[in-house]
Figure 1 (cartoon, one colour):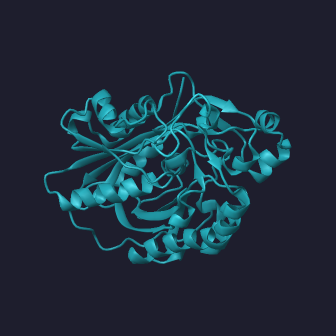
Figure 2 (figure 1 turned 90 degrees about the vertical axis):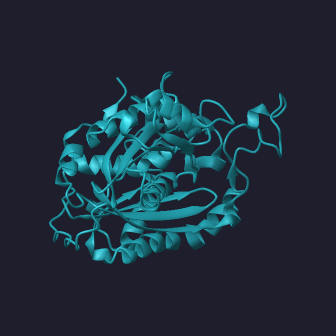
Length: 366
């Protein structure tokens, strides 16, 4: 990062306020190169690399199932937090709907495989906004229920399986890959979780979907080829998103920062999902955040709700985050939702967490 003034340390939070004490990701080792994506899609390689912002697309291996990946990330996050699975009170599962089995609670399996025997578990979904939502839920759970002390957020993502690279109508989703992320949230420790802001717009709810396999259009031998993510009106959707999306992105960030009692000048880092480079740059410019205060995930593509956790982990490893820094996580999910939440890096009484995260390498598949 460029030289900047350190974020001012705010007045101490309540002694038992929630914070993130450990975070981790699991990223499969398989990669699809820009040349391979170009060959499969018919796009020029320079378009894949420069317009879509893909230097590599993560490809899962045969053992990289969503829950298995989530367990790997969760174990690492708990280790970094100095906690064991037996310490966990609640598991908030952020695994996407595309998982090992349909009509299945992945969070219960995740807790069981992890050995979190005391925890109750539930699944939550807001598409690619799920990690941000889960952080807010974990915070609110700890505030509302005095019997809880440790909440684990974890989940896997493999929506890249549902993308047909021969379909130009889903070109903006050619970046979808695979991976998992986890965060440990505790009472009274860690990177202090601050306010969030969320905007939803249901007018986009039917734009992106798997059109078969549900109650409206049951899966059959005749329509099984349509069991993939599709966009019914790509031109119309693009036009409507261009009118609203950038403003909504900016609004959720600005409102979350204002609720935190801070200004945009104080934002030390923006953890953002992978979008095309022009959109990434435009949001930073709109918010007045220098480019070096965010990491562009060109070497990974879009790992759904894992992106913000991955971005934070990469920033911590690069030692670009300092105690007291104001960090913002921002996301968007089809449907459509835009959300953001703030963190005070290092928090209070937790100076070691930032060092612990930075000292541990990003976990990838062997």
